[in-house]
Image (tube, helix red, strand yellow):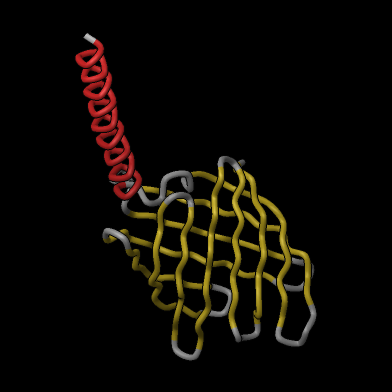
Length: 166
């Protein structure tokens, strides 16, 4: 009797493990299928821009993210301004499994280029490039809070922004 009881417990544990594995793999598949989850909507906040001459300025920023119905295409606008500086960045991004690709433009400087990186679990990491310009961009979203980090070797050395969903 004792032996069959422990056999039943063992079977219950095995069944629970199989169910847990199925649930976790379904959740992971869903996260991969929607790499831009959590970004959709309007955001606003503040940050700083560091310039190549060593100066830095406070920024006021607004961003809008639009994720299409499939969850695989993201349109983004990011507008930031200080008393003497502004940038207006737009991008169109598509997910291809583990990687994302797309195009970006900055209207104030009339530059545009391509981007390549990864997205998922509330984080986007990309490298943006155009003729004579390269930068890295990291966006992290947790709940209603988002951070944006941009780093380059151009006139803009770095941007650090913290925003909340509007």
